[in-house]
Image 1: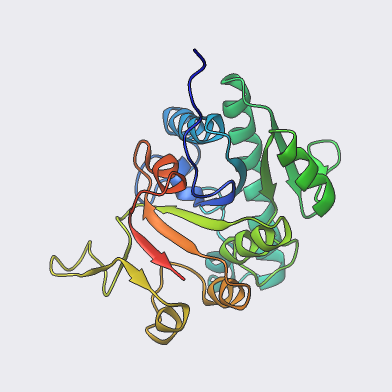
Image 2 (image 1 turned 30 degrees about the vertical axis):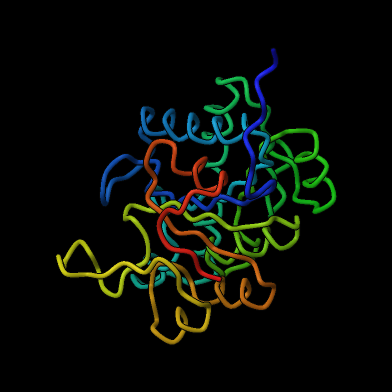
Length: 241
């Protein structure tokens, strides 16, 4: 007897991962192969449920544009280097996923045709319909925009049903839980509350874009099985809607 498919809350999502999530430790640098492998396992398990998966990964484990600008670099030049860092992470993640047998495409907002496809919205949607995981690299292709904003933009363009942000903490708190043991986590928060309270877990431009298009955001800890559980409708972390 064929096993029944799980009942999904979301059928198409964009998962936002930080670059630091691939380096394996706080403030680390580069790509930790074991962490990369575990991330691919999480995304592969989500893909196996039938969810169409888009991924945006940051580049802070290799180069962070804001930091370069704060140390005297030209901001546009610094951000361009950060965009290239996201391509490196995207290619690494593609390799890890394909080693698990998951068909994957990397699409970039800047032209790097020897390495990846250029981002074309309709082509990205076709890849998703063909059950490929699509990794969106190089941010929006423009300086001054974060990868959070790129994730929100791509989610809107491909008609995703939710934006999932996997972090190092359980959700969104009223203050930093790593510094304050009495920090309180929100289970639900509105877009306006998020923006008014200047909650720093996600770029305000990204949240504004989601608000204008009524796209729910789920913020939760990157622990084994959590991405899959959110898509199956389990209550985890904080929902911004």
